[in-house]
Length: 381
Image (cartoon, rainbow, N blue to C red; front, side):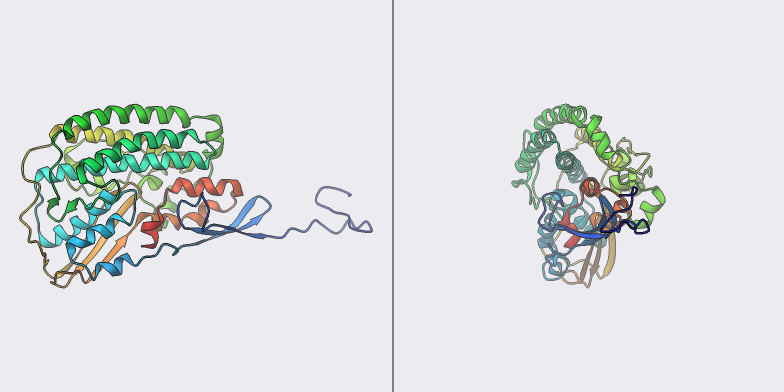
């Protein structure tokens, strides 16, 4: 060996450098760190990722097409199964789209109930992200902390809707049934538990030396590139852009509530993580105000059982835990929609993988993918 970068094979040949060959590496679709049935084909040079090609479609169920064969009230169950950890948020957007098209005025109490459940769902979703992201970084305890508090939220969901996950609780014009008699007491207890739980989660992981080394300045993206790729939600706010549908295009009664929009400054994995931790605190702040303002009154508008909205098209969107979740609805005047198109945030977030993973270490690709918090149910549909 005559020097670094040269290799001797047989007779000494100093003019022959060390040859390198890019290697293709499959990650997924059956892989514990892909957060769903998702496949990435990585081209690597040593430990560095040269290029990546995402492959989706393993979870495709034809949900948008199925909507065309069901009456409007039946479609809500399909939206439960898109982003299956943000069920209430999904139900809300479809109901908002139909209500907008049919000019239905939702009672005030129903709007507050919807808001409370959606913000609790945001906390439950972020707690799941917190736990799985900790696992991606090699830590086992965070998922135990996250699921401990998430279970308390799921128990309240079950008391309200009768189901832990696939709730089918929102209705076009309101909600299925009123809250349990002890709901206010249970919420007061739950808010205290969640506040302590979020603080414990923050102390456990956020500023740990190993966690910072795995996440700080890993998977950076700037604001302009993030906007160009269609990023929304915490992934966009981590770049410093304070875009939140609850402020930019208020719905329900968010315009009556005070809350801040957490943002990052580097757009790296740590910022994407910490924006979500801070969002849980803001959701608790929103829930306290909404619970204090919760009025009495009806929970459903007078809506026909078999609804036939007028012909037309409409767009509705809201701030899903993963970002801007939109629904484009076309009505032909019958009891079934002519077309339903979903704009899922996770689908757009996967567009950023090529930018985020190029020149990363192979060990970091799990952290980068985990920081995006994608749910494949809304990607494939």
